[in-house]
Length: 324
Image 1 (tube, helix red, strand yellow):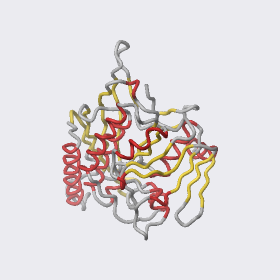
Image 2 (cartoon, one colour; image 1 turned 135 degrees about the vertical axis):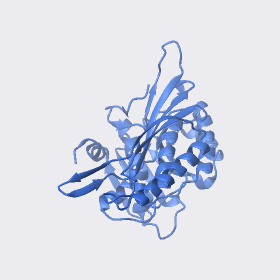
Image 3 (tube, one colour; image 1 turned 90 degrees about the horizontal axis):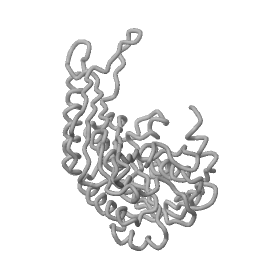
């Protein structure tokens, strides 16, 4: 019912997949994943908790039942045993403890049982006399239930004139982000996760999805807000006009931090105009920010300093389909 790629050209990434196992039933199964390896450079707790959140948040965006989902924890770890070959083994073991604490807290907050998993604890190699190790990484896979696959919202923008929102906290921490990787420098601490606030937001959102009030939704994950907007525009080959001035962020935060930060609990939501007022009333004003409207042939972003960033739909397509 929902494939890994969607849209008029089937080239826009979705948040996951929805399967309809039985032809005599409209119930469905979600399949989603979460992985945030770069965050472990700062704190393995945040890395693990964010991975759980990403998988669970995608389940919610696909119309999943908040109370009917299960997870699988897949650890991919460098050797955590202190030895001459691994002189920092104690630190890597401490990171493993932190990751398990983050995994536990997030699963309890989201009522998410872990039904299986995989632990790979020797992900090191000797290449030309140089030891190479993977980052401490937790991949969380999730399967959940959808009551009615006919209620699953679109994963991108398909109509002009829809109201576009950022649902969830504004975020400006670039630590652990893909932007940080591209810049090739450490850009500070990774984002902090608020599991209780996220869980409350997801339940409200799930009810709105079941009521058919959400036209389209896409989670904010790799690449931050700007990539979520670009993926949404790519799906229906419809642009958007966005103004980020309404986001409540520190005055010192630059536009890049607003656009590329990858904090938890966030979605880009598209609504038909008649549902906008009810949607806004369902959430706190600080976590439900109207960004703009869909339409046109480009993603146009009004920056806080008055400049405007324009990215054509062709440029978005090329960015997603051309090899590096």
